Length: 405
Ligand SMILES: [Fe+2]
Ligand SMILES: [Fe+2]
Image 1 (spheres, protein in one colour):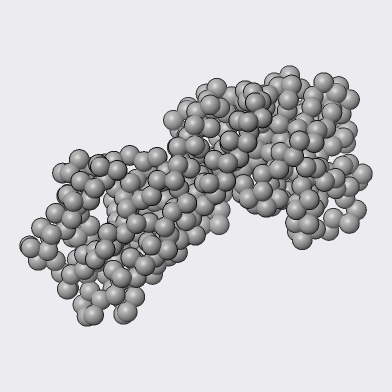
Image 2 (cartoon, rainbow, N blue to C red):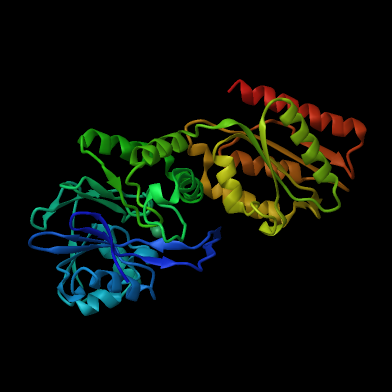
C-alpha cells in the first residue's frame, strides 16, 4: 500500500471502505476514512485515524513513508468513531505519543475508549504546533458537526484539514477532485451537506466568515471523507456558502407514497402543473427507498436546491403512511428552516374516511421550518376530473409563487 502525496512532506494515508452502503440511514457508494501524515524536519504528525478495523490500511500507507513507530504526534480533529476508531490500536502501539484535541474531545474520547493511559493534550483556537518547517494551527469548530470538532491548518502549505466539513461519501481509487471530476465530487458533497450539515447552516456561514477574517490562504482542503479539493477548493467553499444560504433553483421536489394509486394521481397532476408553469420537477415515490434515487437521503439532496417541497400521503387508519412519517421525521431533524432562504411546502393526499394525513404533513413541514401553503389538497377516495384539474392548477400556482421567489 502506498501513501498519496499532497505536497512536500504531506501525504494521504487513509483507508477505503469499498462496501459501506448504509451509514446511520444514509445510503452511500462506500466511503473513505482520510488520515494524513505531515512530515516536518523535527516531528511527524498523523492527522485523524479511521473506522475500527481499517487500521492496517492506515498504518500500511504510513509505512510507505516512515516507520509508523516513529510518529511523534497525533491530531484528533473529531471523536466520532469513523475518525477516532483507530486510536486505541495506534495509541497502544505508540504509548506516550501526544494526542492533540479539543477539551470536549478529551471528555468524549473517555466516553468511547479507555483513555487513562493516553497522552491527551488540549488545544484551543490559534494554538500552534511546530513540526520543524511545518506548522499546524488549530481552530476549534464546535458543532461543525459535533461539539468536539476542530479544523487543523498547515500554514506553510496552506492546507486545511477540516475533518467532516467539505467531505463526501464516495469510495474511489481517485484521491483528488480533478481526478474524480468536479461535478461528481460536488454532487457527492451536496448529498453529504444535505444529510449532515443543513441543521448547522448558520454555523457554517459564521465559521467561514471567521476563517475569511483570519486572512489565511487555502490552497487545498483535505477533508476526512472522499476526495481532496486541490483544484476546486474555492468552488466547494462557494458551494457551502450557497447551500447554507439555501440558494435554490426554480425547482420543486414532490415526495409521496400511495396505497391504491389515488395519491399517485394527485402527485402527477401537481407535477404536470409545476412543469407547465416552468419548474424543474423531481418526483420521488418513497416505497421504503426501493426506487432508485428515492431513498430519504437522496430526496433531501434534491430538496436542498428546490424552492418547494410537496409531500403526499393517503390516510391509513388515522395517520399518514409510515414511509411518509419516516421521511418527515428525518426532515424535521435536518431543520431546513435554518437555511437562510425559506422553502415553500404543500401537503396532499387521499382518504377513505375522515382523513388526517394532510394536516399531519402540514404540521410536520411547519416544524421543519418550511412555510406551508395552507389547506393543501385532500380528496375523498380518488380524485375525480375536477379534483385532478384542481391539483394541476395548484401545481401551476406553486410554479407562479416559486418563480417569483
Ligand atoms: Fe462526524
Ligand atoms: Fe465522518
